[in-house]
Image (cartoon, rainbow, N blue to C red; front, side, top):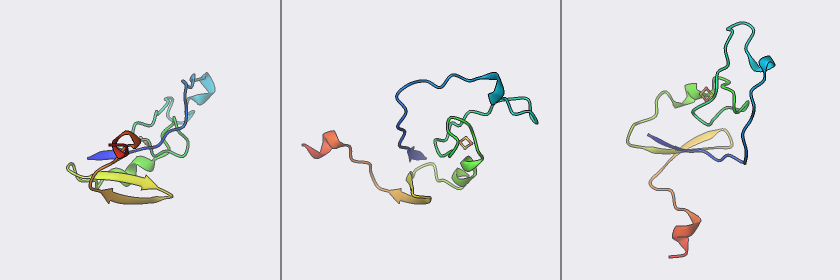
Length: 78
Ligand code: FES
């Protein structure tokens, strides 16, 4: 599985003590790229559980779609 994720941040986010979940005592950092609370996990990764290993997915406007191939701006100039 490949997932195309668009991120706009251009620098790090320093974690603060108040970022710790009082109930769990930890900080969960999102690795799937789908969280609305990025960089923190909000449970959105559950949407990826049925992704196929051989498929590329784009998540956009709350919808998931499968794509054959991702074309970058550099490739369109060729
Ligand atoms: S890992 Fe991304 S929302 Fe949980």
